[in-house]
Image 1: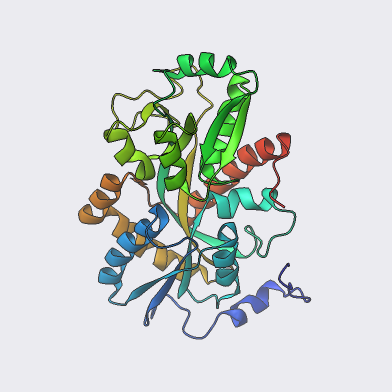
Image 2: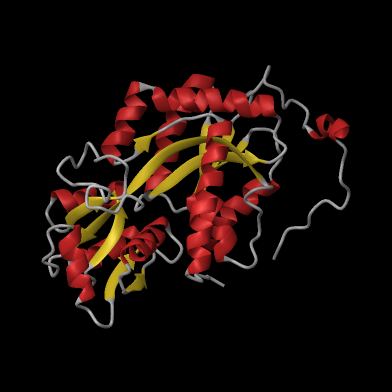
Length: 325
């Protein structure tokens, strides 16, 4: 169901009247912040929020309460944030599933990613990696492509779920190589990776945060990273560009957003504190060690990135006619 939209269009002169009392940069924040994470506790997005949240809390002198609201392919958490008061005290960890993929994967969505949520900053990237299990003999991308082309019915690949960055990264690889592959969706990266490691499914795209332990233990082999440069944690694994597929770049992008109509001065104040928390050496190191590429940019830069991502991925999703409802 769509949320009801305002029936009256307010003039720009009336906009300051909509700002809640106390929503000014001078006294913000003067009470605890609620940080909604649209996934269950324990995953990469949850770790990112809690790690940055601890640093943010120390900087602002206020508690930062992480509130896990999983479900609806992140729509439950996104909808709750969209309905919250636009005062800077409710924020959401929003990935490219929430902000880029969902609007074209679903005919009906309970929030409008472009109109209901305002960008604050991109917090981190989770670059995608092509990994194979013990049943796949390929040692590099070209050998993988050759093996896949021998499968007349198409090579199976696992993902963290239909419409996830992991799924769409492999769809992008399929388009760039012309391969025939069959999607096997799971409920999360962990069970998908476990089946790849057990030889039940030959391959998948996985982010480093989820896959590092399996890769380092030799349970799966990393063939290429969908990143412009090699990852410092996997210096011996080439990029797809090095293998001749420069367009295969994909990552789970996790940013921070707040309800639309949050005053720009409050957004800027929140941005500065979150970016500073990300840049703190202890927080930065924890994120890198977990497999996250820390970022921290301006609202304008995050907004421009989202527009570029929408242009790129919406075309792919529509061309492949991928729908989730």
